[in-house]
Image 1 (cartoon, protein in one colour):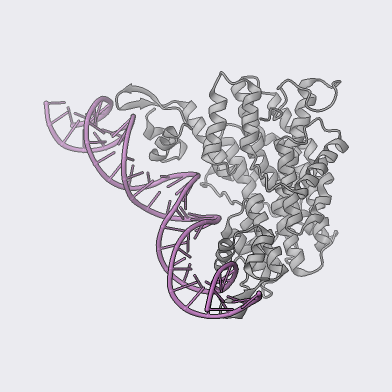
Image 2 (cartoon, rainbow over the protein chains, first blue to last red):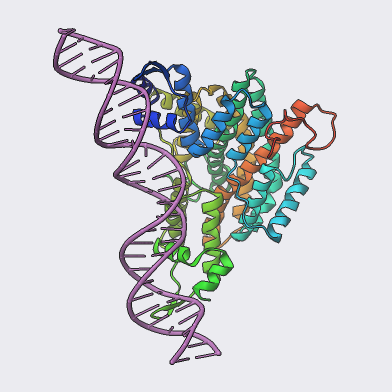
Length: 227
Length: 227
DNA sequence: CCATCATAGATAGTTCCACTATCGGATAGC
DNA sequence: GCTATCCGATAGTGGAACTATCTATGATGG
């Protein structure tokens, strides 16, 4: 297919497709003549993936490019690709070093030990978590950190489900793409579910247990007041 | 305190503080003379909250401003404030309408019913979830949608924990701020924990059950390959 | 075979966002 | 008085993600 049809099928404007090719996010079409190239369904799929990571996952084009190029490169061993993915999928707050951050790191290490997780507490994910803890404390909501264990307990089955999804894939590219999609879009999925569950939990807490179906509250329910 | 000290204590540059005041994110200092103003610990706390929502939560300044101004305004009833928060904390993908989106909406409604949630499936959170489902399908990862129930089951205890945290607050402003912080920073916290749990689950799945502590794998472990 | 349309590739421009720089005049505190 | 700091205002910066325009070339249809 030509670029016009690719644009129509993916919903991405032609100049934007050209821009993505320039930025190395999308391989160029197969040139059939000096000013004519043909694109296939692989391009279409890649384009949809880019838009999902961009719009839903909120990744930057630079991050998407790094990840996708690593996925494409057959030279890269799988674990390297996953390393790139882990780094680029993490906002990586870092923050200014200090005793606060050291304390938070220590708490993360204790949590990992407490739950018996086989994970490095000082890897990208652990650093990210420590950054969040510091930010919560700095924002005056240190109490929220007490929920860490509850959150960790909920994260375990989610991680197992993710791995289960990824485990069903065999081809290298499919595998890696599964990890990326699971990490990025799975996060968006959980986030939406969490907000839905907030409405439910709030409804039960403030409207009383005995009342009827959803939406019966008069506004006390958290998040229920949509407009 | 004067603006210089506020800057030193919060780590935010003076011109940036002035910028936040101009944008209505931070109340102006108390003028003690035509060109002298004094700031208090409330300003400092607010400033830290802004930075947390911006850096960790990834909210835009516009969204932060809407939420904080609603929180500040004593005219606004609590449920209105929570409505504003819910809307601004949601990326609100919307996406183009079509049969795909209708199908996804239907699935969300079925999920809500299946779990017995007292929540409107067509509120902001439900719409957001439907958008994610559509994006997953469009990106060629419709299979991931099968994890919806696992994710929903994990979201329930998290939502209960959040509500429990919020429930401990009594003052109106504290309550609302708790919701905002819980929703935004709690998401970042869960996200980091989920990635940590990925490392663990991957280690167990690929490195064998019997091996020793963390980090022992040779790279097959998801995300374990940090830089 | 010729008019019309789409395309490749290149360069430059736009919009939004989150700051950052500079300035003129006033004040604080020694 | 002197210097550092401050207020308020205006203007400028840099990055991100496009978008517009242009030229030369080729495809398509009557």
